[in-house]
Length: 223
Image (cartoon, rainbow, N blue to C red; front, side, top):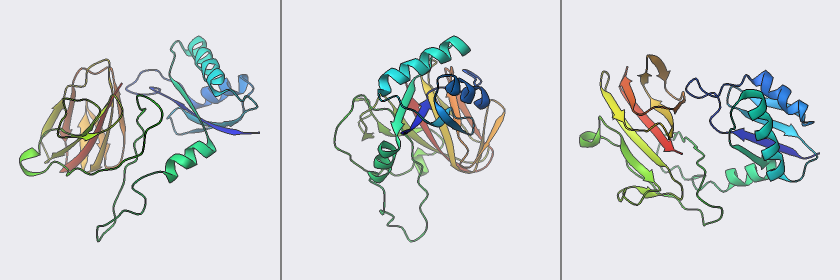
């Protein structure tokens, strides 16, 4: 029986669209999906199914979640082969040209459309005169002329903050943010976030980040 990976977008972020993982597993079992296993509180779940039409199954999961929990998240289904192919196609594999270890954050952003040739590039992290604020590193918007192009309605930003500094980003309530300190520690709305922890942000007009220590941050702004 085929194994599928299900990813729910916008679940358990910013105190909204809450689903406990035991309840999510029970919901999948009620749909006759076998051996569902969840990962932390992410809304990601692995299961087995006889259903061959992923589009039909995704809509069925969406509708059931809506009836049970009162909201309708986007449901993304991938086979294990598709996930392995995506990992194998990473343009960063084997490209560490630095003398020490390189830490890579792999961030998945939904493209505008399927297809297209893979590409890779690099941008310097904001330092010196560009520190203390968010700088766009990659973008799918034409106005961000200095950023690496991506085929998505999204931006990837970086910021370097000294301890005590504050950076502000106008996210907008219709957008979603994902923030990771690569190093240091920060605070958002009184919540401490340490290095390599992730913060999912939604329903926020403005994101205000205070550095509790010297920090380097990566922020994704997406739909």
